Image 1 (cartoon, helix red, strand yellow):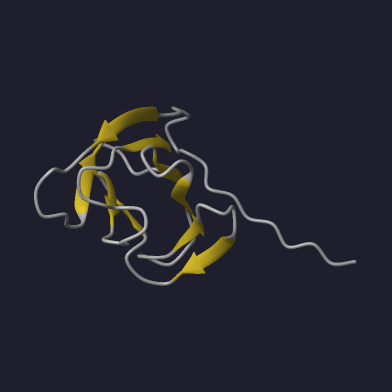
Image 2: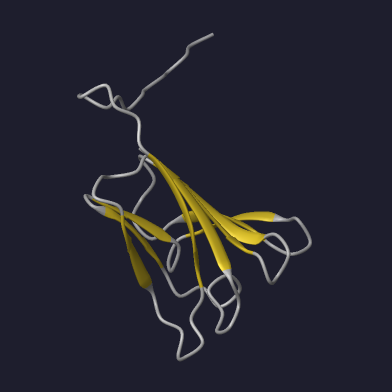
Length: 110
């Protein structure tokens, strides 16, 4: 059996974690969350839609995400997902997750 493994380690040996909420009552668009550091994992849940959401891990392509639908089905989206930035992350305009007047909860670890 062959095993391939990789990891991302914070050089300064400091672990960062942050959580928050976001709601847009106007015209919904992609949005940035500024953390001051680059996360290695981000999860965004649409609280209003009861469990619709995204997860993105370091190493995934920008704009991709694992998407959980309301029915619990998991798919990989290849656009309008999450993009990790050197200072935070961007949540794309996926019309199932990022919806006007619906509250999004997010957590990021770096």
